[in-house]
Amino acid sequence: MASLKTVNCIACYGTGKTFDHISVGGAMRKLRLKAKLSQAEVARRMGFSSAYVCDLEAGSRCWTEAKIALYKKVCE
Image 1 (cartoon, rainbow, N blue to C red):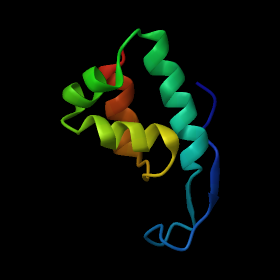
Image 2: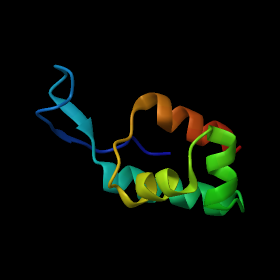
Image 3: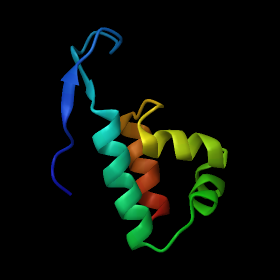
C-alpha cells in the first residue's frame, strides 16, 4: 500500500502530524472488501464494535499506527 497521507495536527502528541483519517479509512475499507470481510467480522476480530469500525472507515474516528496494523492483520 502507498504511504498514508498525513496532515498537520494540534492533537498529535507532539509529532506535528497525524493521519488523514478519511483517506486512511477509505484505504482500509478497500482492504476489507478485497478480503471479502464484513465490518462486523473485522470488528469482532479487532475487539471493537461494528459501529466503531464503521466510524474508522468513514474517518470520523482517529486512526493510529497500531489500529492500522491490527486492521491490516485481521484482513490478511
